[in-house]
Picture 1 (cartoon, helix red, strand yellow):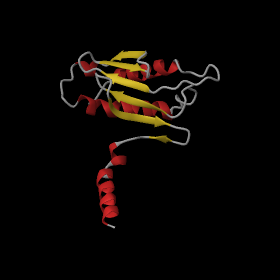
Picture 2 (picture 1 turned 90 degrees about the vertical axis):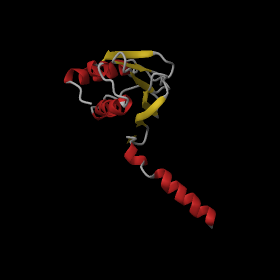
Picture 3 (picture 1 turned 45 degrees about the horizontal axis):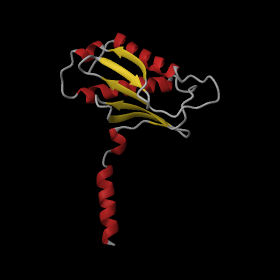
Length: 149
């Protein structure tokens, strides 16, 4: 799915608005993840925390007219790229969020579709299908080998 520069800017602005609530103001830390909920029917992107408190909202024009059944599959790389850009731009360095915390893509029922980015104390991990590809087969082979001995 290709989206306009204006839509990219809207997503980035919504993320920055959401994270501005967690800018370091004192020594206290907040325990939460950041949830991103794209809505295909209205074209909205809603950003909220673990307490379902809405942090930001934006309308993405290209999502309103999208009628494919692969909506989350199409939206996931766009949102992952925006979150990664925040990380690379050091926009996540001065937050009062206790590590580890995640940026999570959720569906209409607020069920997790995928984890877009995990921030921890050691390193930042980008979770992707490539990282986990073949893991089930390797674990099955390992278990089979272990049980045969």
